[in-house]
Image 1 (tube, protein in one colour):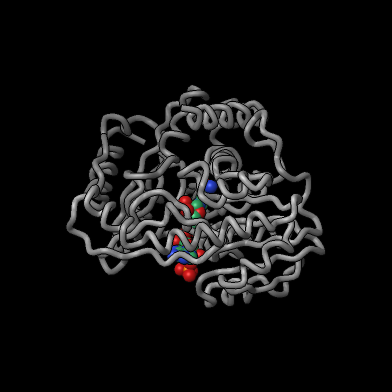
Image 2 (tube, protein in one colour):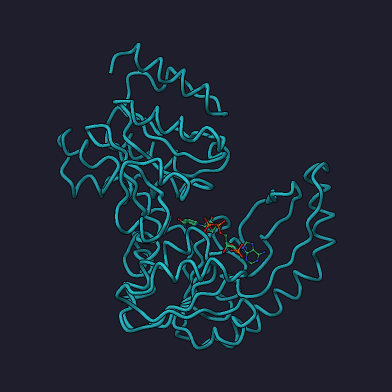
Length: 376
Ligand SMILES: NC(=O)c1ccc[n+]([C@@H]2O[C@H](COP(=O)([O-])OP(=O)(O)OC[C@H]3O[C@@H](n4cnc5c(N)ncnc54)[C@H](OP(=O)(O)O)[C@@H]3O)[C@@H](O)[C@H]2O)c1
């Protein structure tokens, strides 16, 4: 790609995305990106991927692209036509919405109904993949973080409770259903509709039995499970902006019990919001945590408690599970495993092999570099 073409590409892209690009850092390099609504404010992948590029000593950069929804097709068109674009990742709220804009989608991603990684082929086609489910299951059974023994050797024939049915949960469900063999996958969500949609996609595929559970029944049914996985946002750090413009927070909540936090209008500064929100939500937080502690103390010792949230590293659910003597796993391993898989298996694989990298060495370096970023 000539410098002029790249400058034009960057200028065109800058006209569509709302975060500031740095043309001097992009020019003359291979470029990978994360597409989302505001990934520049929170995404972990730019630091992970850039650490991997540095460790491999290749001339490439990973940038966040904050894309307003109506401009997504135009952004995808530019990326498809840009020779130096490698691909990258996709985050909320575009994991499903990007599918019709791609040239092809891997069969697992199609079954999941969402894409979190895209690769640009040498002939300029954009292919979608999903590594969330793969990463989430690998973290349970394989050593992703050196020195940390995975909580399980196999998922075969186990009963697993999956809480949540958003994008990440649906990706996990597809991989879990395959891995559980003659076990059982029980999915519980606040609302029933996403589970019906998921099950209609999964029915007829080979794998574990599927069961639906209401959110209220988690407290009675969880003690019959071998593994409990939180894939909801209950316990996630940060102030959440709701579609109606109000704000709320879910960090002080455990995923195993109901959460009905106060929703307050925007407008106050952050400290005033936090104080008013905590006061208004105190009774609900207390009831959620009391129920969670009561449940964790009733869980059999064998139950593994897994929360895919990684901010905070120990959610309230995991705190309670650790205090009650259970094996716990947070979302760090999943985050690293999904990023390593996207980088080494799909987005950068062909280019790096053409650059002379041996596949095993490449995977090891990328994993070490990404884990190193996590350790900072
Ligand atoms: N470790 C990793 O690599 C990794 C990867 C992906 C995601 N994650 C984490 O996983 C979590 C879910 O992400 P996502 O992309 O799947 O989000 P999402 O698509 O927005 O789904 C959100 C889920 O949370 C539920 N939920 C929201 N508010 C709730 C409340 N007050 N009470 C009960 N349930 C509630 C939703 O239920 P309804 O359907 O009823 O609204 C839905 O099941 C996030 O914390 C994210 O950071 C981690």
